[in-house]
Image (cartoon, rainbow, N blue to C red; front, top):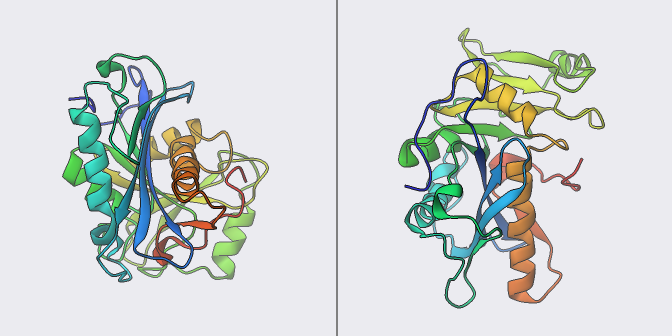
Length: 263
């Protein structure tokens, strides 16, 4: 296998060498044509080692709270292509599975996946990051840009005041629902942006480890694995269509796309 199955825990990341990110981008105004993207980066250097971008036809309708059923099948296929790839960068037609470095197959392993969405921070306790983790048996971390309001969690004045209390990069506060459960962590990931991230457990990783790993992968506000997957999926769509069409990231459930990826 090219993506190793392990559980991330403990106080350090000894032996962690590669991190992955996934994303789906759509053409604005077309919710059926999308580009599914998987990237693998070195860790801790965060250099892109591998990318897979592929146009997909999305047939499942968007239903709030069920985004995983619409998008995860394409992300699982991307992971499977990497698992089955002998390290080749060849693919037919308009499809691309490109190794950006002349690495052997065992150097393309990803040991954890960053997912643009939620994990346990979900009305049913099982968001897109959980789905992808269970289906691939890989550690997954949910990283959302907006609060998914549930279990008494709302973006009210108290929540906004808590966000304002995050003064420095790395500051956090827990998201504790009305149930008493800690569902995720709010993280200020970048000094130059006051907009936080909402980090939650996806699969085979504890919340503390997830937050520390997200912090270590942020050159800008968005963790580099997700940022690179988004950039490359958008660029792939533009090249395929030979047009400067506006491209947006996936479904309404994830909130409005940031205008600047390096915010």
